[in-house]
Image 1: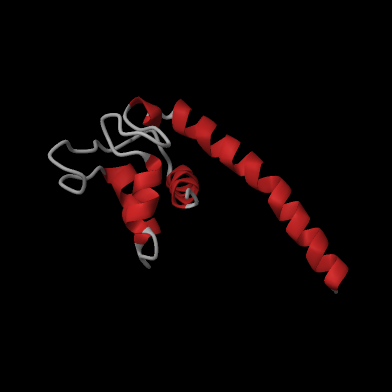
Image 2 (image 1 turned 90 degrees about the vertical axis):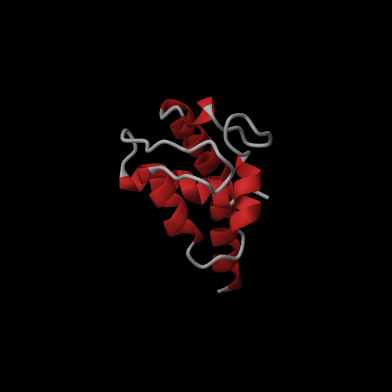
Length: 103
């Protein structure tokens, strides 16, 4: 049992970088990086700041998926985030999970 748990942990840890690379590539392909960066404000907030602001909130994932799909206004100041009509629900979830995983 212990060996299986260790193997599972190692497999998960090995897949984490791939998840981050896939999500980062997705963010680039959907033009998210035109307004956002991982660790600095561009037009919108840095993804690390988003993760920090929403840390521990039960509905963070749902709120952020909605913001990606429908846009948002007033959360980070006067500049609205436009809806991204080229992002599917599954892609929005992948992007949001990646953002919320940032420390």
